Image 1 (cartoon, rainbow, N blue to C red):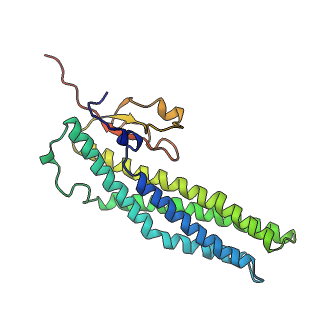
Image 2 (image 1 turned 90 degrees about the vertical axis):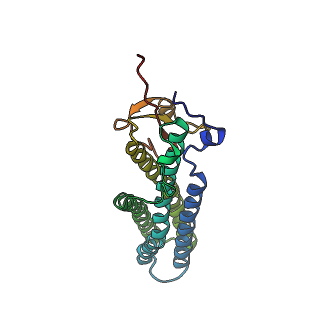
Image 3 (image 1 turned 180 degrees about the vertical axis):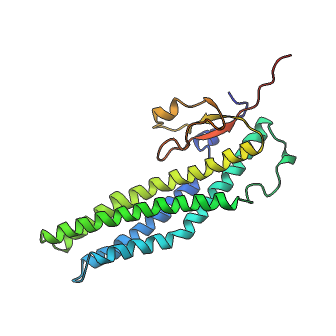
Length: 244
């Protein structure tokens, strides 16, 4: 086992990003709720109810770009800082080896790639939500449904697809950015081996539980996050000194 003392707080939230993730989920939830309210007003009127769907999703995506970029950068910074803490605790690096602004000087290209990945994931959700909304509204109109029934279709599509998937995306993409930054930082400091650490929470999936404590060459570790909403991280492994 890696010689790092981990307190209960770290074991429950290894990345230290739970508050940030919860805030990101809440932001996206709010944006989808705003789009839903906008569309509920449309179906309650007498005009076109199909065309406004794409416009509402486009506005949601545009309004979310700044928050997406902010979240990616925060996740990277936390990945650098958390990995530094683990390496310090393990004695892999000294405090002098870590500059005061460590984690604040992000790699511009890596940051751009991660932001584009996150935005693409969100666009996939808004596109799918728009498709289902238009299909549902078309079916309802052709069936002669009134505004009350059409409103139910809107709520079901936005809540069941948009909001649910956005929450999952928020957690998964945040952890992806965190772990990408942490692995890059480990490699930069000569760490060649990492250990899988799961969050010590109820409902732990069997797939991750089987990996807990296992060590891998840093370039051969399984993909992390392992699955949607995964909270696992990687710890640095102290190189073993061969006995003389």
